[in-house]
Length: 297
Image (cartoon, rainbow, N blue to C red; front, side):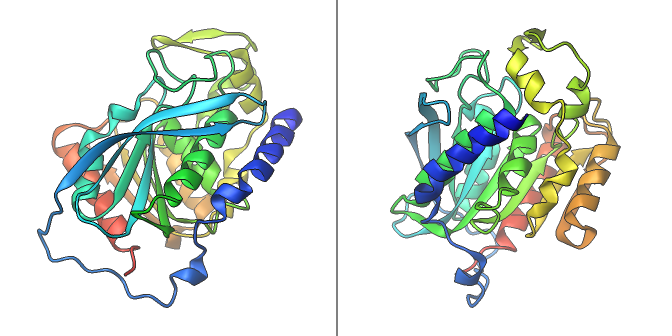
């Protein structure tokens, strides 16, 4: 675990210049909240986009992803979307379109080495861990924050399941907590360390993919609830009460870690670990409303 933290420390130094362009809270505190007419929708455009960087192990990483953004010229807040276990950049089409139509530049990407059939390069399944995923997400924040059509003072993070776990950890980094305007998560898998604590440190098949020995070793001594509360801005969590993978206690522990006054928690009756139909509609609307309540002119 100490080696992982030292590696991440080196990556922090390497990425400081990338993140420097992202705004702090004082940059937006004098602004007024942005208000769009009810029902207004921007036309949207899609574009493949790669983020290239060198990770803490010296690997040349190329993150493949897609930007969904308003067609109109101008600067917009950004949302960076993080997929779950064995997921892909294409896992959030409804969210990307819904947020872009309301004036957000959305970037979803493949975490490197974290899925079968992924298009990001530079790391294997045996090498990826939540900490390499943090490095990927940090690199994406720096890259997207520098785009011409992005207001780098207003970058939001969004993640589902394992992507929510990584989102929570990343936003809590000392040099990230001010750069991120807010975070939203579907059923964040903050149970991951408990799931692997005490298990053999070896490559383990899981749900059509593999969890590597490095991944298991990296989380066994991790207490996410001692970390995530370092993020002091508002948080949106959407969870279904039929979730068989993330128990309610992990959601309650997250609310306690962040502080009840800063968490907008929505529990969807009958929904499981993955939203569809009316549950998805509800989840997307809750996150969209959260974003708009924290977006400035």
